[in-house]
Length: 161
Image (cartoon, rainbow, N blue to C red):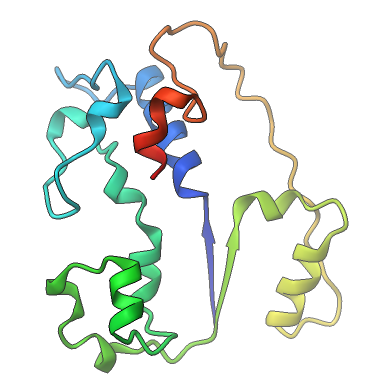
């Protein structure tokens, strides 16, 4: 059995960009001053080294999940998933036989503990032993860098699409 945890792709991008502002990789790499500059011409365009791995197409988690082949992946589904042509060839022969449980990390803090019950049921456990996750404050002063961005602001609509 596989358990896959994801962060919402839009929030992942915002968080990773802001993380790289606080903790840049070693070297002379710099992030674009305007996060909208992270947009690349296509998902096939390599992520520039200066972006320090912060590229929107790295958040296309749906494409990675499609590779588990848990759905038929017919033409309409492949179109919606925007799977690159090179990734479609032979995909149906690579079906992962394992059952898969997918969750989004905000579910870990579920106050009514449905996440624990669902995981316990998936794993066929008698009693849920998971407790709701409470995120700790990372001590980061959210106002220290003027380049930090909030992806919900109107100017970043292109990144949310």
